[in-house]
Image (cartoon, rainbow, N blue to C red; front, side, top):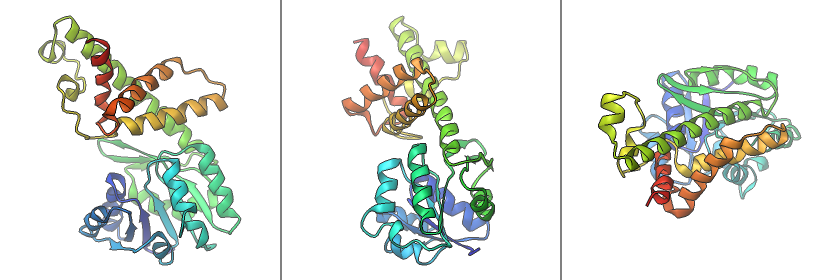
Length: 278
């Protein structure tokens, strides 16, 4: 296995992969449509590729750090997409939050060319990233050292789709907690209570961003959460699982996104309660 790893998508997650892999003894080559992001990756040791095709020609393992199905589809099947240049040696790892159906589809498409496609969605924790790899076991066994280098911890979850399903549970929990915190803070405000009551006195430790009106992104955006909750509900439909609370939380993120808060930090969904309580 080559020690050079390709990374397509050089945002927060992709840059973290560059840092982890470079410090773990791997070389990295990167591509992103945003040149500023590539230059930032280069500051951490990455080589810049001129296109996805150029990147694929130089590596066997390609990590996708992309935000959902449409962008994955564009990289795989757009002009100069990866499907055009696949070799049997290629293993593609989708680390974004995508739909299980999409990852199963590309597993089949890549297999037609003798290549492999794994999923390994991620979530942040205090110590680093947790990765949730799934797909063909033989492909996972080849790339396991790379996944280990990129993560704080990981667990192989079996057939394609299982990683994205567990990620959906993760996103459901984070989004629901975010929503109930927003409702509680807005409710307290309506009753005349503020941060000093909930934090200094009751010691709840709620999201501090929600007490103000600055929702500059520090984690995921409301638009990203909306997308993830959409996938969670699609998975629930396939498994005949009822998610009534998630359906309500989805509406809060949808309202915030529609009314101009899509690029806000996820704490910005408190705007929904602000609009209700005018």
